[in-house]
Length: 197
Image 1 (cartoon, rainbow, N blue to C red):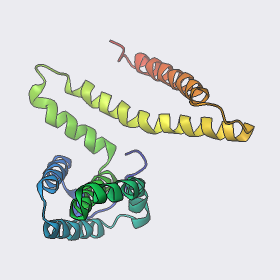
Image 2: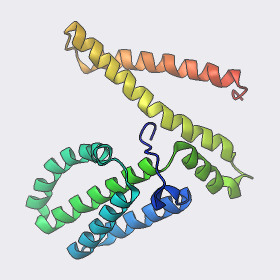
Image 3: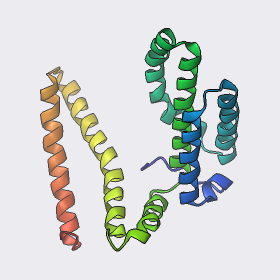
């Protein structure tokens, strides 16, 4: 989610985070349960209206959806041959719409709003769990995903610059070592702020 938020004043941007999460969950469950192509078409129209109404940059939205297209290029023909083309179309449509809605959520909701929503959601259970610590855990998880992605990219670029094409182990070792260094630095920063207990 880091770096994906696109500021705006649309209705989608202003909607409460928990409401957006609830509607996203309901929409995905309903999509998964439908076996009618017409319903899928109606859902697609609604998603397009939401994306256009949110006025998010279309190029950025497409960039988030594009990786799933590679999966569909392989999965749709296989599904079509094994289970029929209607089933394959339903599967592709469901997946594409769910990913599009998830991308819209990340582009219209700040990380801070998501963390606050998690804390509010967990507040009734504060007798058994520490909602603030869970919020911190979610924040660290969100932050570490792009951090590890950057480490992998930098290691790949370094290997390319040296002209080496080693095994998977030759890639994994420097990634793990650099990730451990980053985790150690993060642990020291948390300890310095009194969050080491």
